[in-house]
Amino acid sequence: MKRSPRILLLSATAALAVPATASAAVPHTIAPGETLWSLAAAQNMTTRAFAAANGLPEDARVIAGSTLKIPTVAEAAGALAQAPAAAPATSTSASAAPASSAAGAPPAQGGYTVRPGDTLSGLAASSRIPLAQFAQMNGLDPSRPLLTGTVVKLPTGAPAPANAAAPAPATRVVPAAAPAAAPGRVTADQIHQTAAQHGVPGSLAAAIGWQESGFNNAMVSSANARGVMQVMPGTWDWVQQNLSKSRLDPASPQDNVRAGVLYLGSLLKGSGGDPATAAAGYYQGPASVARIGMLPETRRYVDNVMALRSRFGG
Image (cartoon, rainbow, N blue to C red; front, side, top):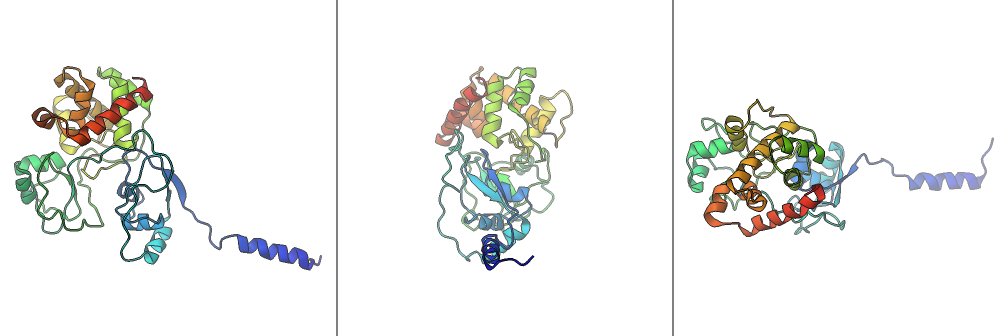
């Protein structure tokens, strides 16, 4: 049957309204603790490419509750190719979506990305702690070279390394140490169950888990903490040796929760059962809290955790 000119015109107009290539990107709501880097790393992309696909500079801070798109590798590469060489100053959020109650969470303390010229012994010396302690805390082998781009934690209050003013490498390296930032999520009920088994308030454990990672076990912070409860390699080893009665699976989200709960239980015991002091120790380190009190960002962290407790039954 011969089509009328009117039908042909409508068909052509409709065709022009459809993009030549449909985007495969999917929307993602930012969870507490997530950053551009962690989102990019989960997709095996560079932060720069992931940010370019979202129209953001690579140092942009994203806010929990806002939405970004997860692009395909091809989309991210295309966006990066078209991005300007230098990005303008960043906004503090990726969108106008309202932030969650944990949106004001301070970043992990002591996060540092190794620059060219840094050495393990040099970082330990500038942090004023023994080399073995620095290596153990970060799950590093002191006999091996320190790779540029490695994320490490510096002790709370340590001076900035000499190379801190240099640009951070675009590619970041996570030390191969337990616990693993393996895929998987847990629920608040699962955290409550684990906490109850070890005499820890479930609402406190769940609040810290949500504050730290949004219950996402694939999270790695800028300070080298991993998993649902953002456990450092050194803390994992200490819990395994001193608190856990059975072997912890480094890749298990449930065992990451168990390690975090056991550590939180020890902090509660050391604080006489005070949840605010225990939460402060979880973030800042108990020795630092005892020595200098809560830092301003620690108080903000504790306030967030205490507010979140009501959400999780506390």
